[in-house]
Image (tube, rainbow, N blue to C red):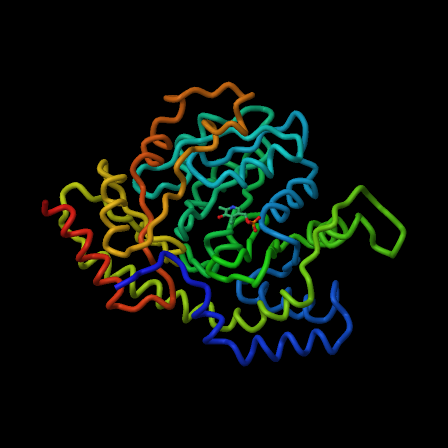
Length: 368
Ligand SMILES: *Cc1c(COP(=O)(O)O)cnc(C)c1O
């Protein structure tokens, strides 16, 4: 049996008729940017998150950058970011000219540890930017407690968290603004690059609508130096077909995660993901930990199981950030995670039989 980590053909097949109709609708309209499909998707997506505004943009990285730009965060400012996340979060901060200040994760959740964030705040700190890593909501309540008295922003990197909930609220409505990616492999994925910002802040939403379109409210009149970061009509139309299925597809992920948990319980050298009681994760990834990670990965490859490491090198040790002068040992928890995490296949179109095959192969490895 083959169990790919990810296969983007089944979701397209399931929704084929709707996607074909959306494609024809956009082609027939003769209108390809900043039109009715985008407006409708923005309203539908914001409603699903529970915010007043949704602003479609070109991708997740630019969604983050645009929020920082819109709030005037730039040179001389510091933004707290996860030491163990995806590099995009750091890059967004660097690319607006501000300084990413890495913070170690809570070793149980792998999300930003509020107690450690508290020690990193300076008079230059402007924002705290957690990732809802692997689809588990970060502890934004504790981050707001730190941020509020100092007037700091809590901004969400929600690229892995579509539909996840924390204490009854949906990811994307947990901070002052949230950045989503609709990269094809995300829980809500377009058929190309796409992204969005959600927020309840009217002034921020207005500014983002102009910033994504050359800083222009009226054509050829430029209020500020904006970007070109538009979500196309075609991708908006595809996303409108997929959005109504997000909850059901997330529910399938939840069922498969429960199956993993049941079948992988009690292996001494294997750490399963931990979920805080008030969180409802959406299992963008199902990430296990073991000191024997590389051997386990080789074993699973032989058994026909696709895996991946998210992420093998923490940003502070990448050549991209060499100029910052970080050294191995600066963020030991992030570094240990990079050495031990392994993502097992999970997605709405994996079958229980496939998950059972993965679990049997994992058990076989640890029984030797
Ligand atoms: C995917 C991802 C991004 C970037 O999204 P793009 O649409 O690829 O630019 C940012 N942050 C995290 C945590 C991601 O997983």
